[in-house]
Amino acid sequence: MSLVINHNLMAANAARNLSSAYGNLSVSTRRLSSGLRITTAADDAAGLAIRELMKADITALNQGVRNANDAISLIQTADGALQVIDEKLIRMKELAEQAATGTYNSDQRLMIDSEYQAMASEITRIANATDFNGIYLLNGNLSATSHDGSGMQAQGKLKVHFGTANDSAEDYYYIQIGTATASALGVGNQSAAGAGFSISTQQGAQQALVALNDAIISKDKIRASLGALQNRLQNTVTNLQTQAENMQAAESQISDVDVSLEMTNFVRNQILTQSAVAMLAQANSLPRLAMQLLGG
Image (cartoon, rainbow, N blue to C red; front, side, top):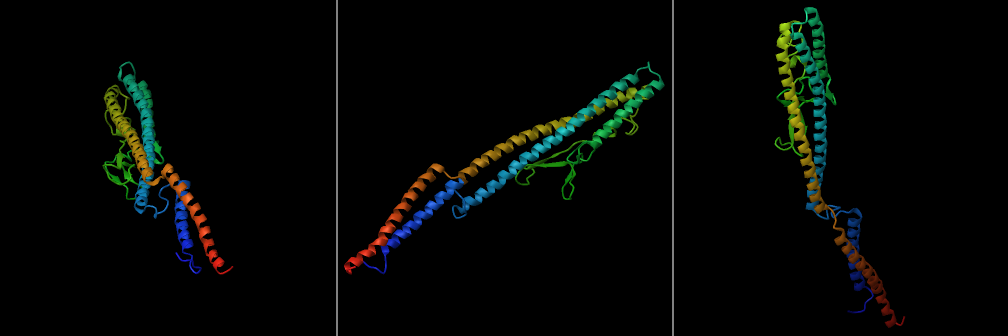
């Protein structure tokens, strides 16, 4: 190679190698400091797209777990109120049994019936007052067979959404709760005149025993349905958590840096950078040799 002073090709070559090694060192530093293999789209455009979709699904799944847990809390609230209603129905049956015997006169049965009707009124009050986050649970609002979420306020049975899309087979199901007012259960004078209307007479008390038995069965069907839904939601929570965990592991494989491998690259690039700096300094000094030939 000729000794020239207008162009220092060795310095240019060293500078190019320095630029490459320094760029690689910068990438390794960025990856090691962030813990991510993909920090910009330039690192892996396809991998970045897959990672962002996975992150969105993981976030949605975690929110789905919270949604399902909220639904479990809602069911527990309804079941707790039904448990109190259960106590009232049991007391009403006790009162009907008392009034059904012939050892009481009409005035005494009227007094027994007064407590009976008070229990029925309390059942209706509990059913109308039980709510979760402003959603009334036992007054019949959630007893409809259809759901309409097109308005600002959803109507009909309650839709619990926990999946990442909107597929009825995978991403949501409904909570339907029957009406638990005294009239719906067929007891008390708020209901249509029937077997459980009043226990002010011996015949009425005897008929009320059958009506109360039917009311307890109706209430138990509501509780059994809620219990089945709660178990289903708890299984859903477990499944969602497993899905989120597995997806997080997959996202980590795509996105996270292998620290041991990247540290190896970092050390190599660091050495190359230092070597390139040293050689660039040497190459920059070579044109001075021409001065010796010029008598400098």
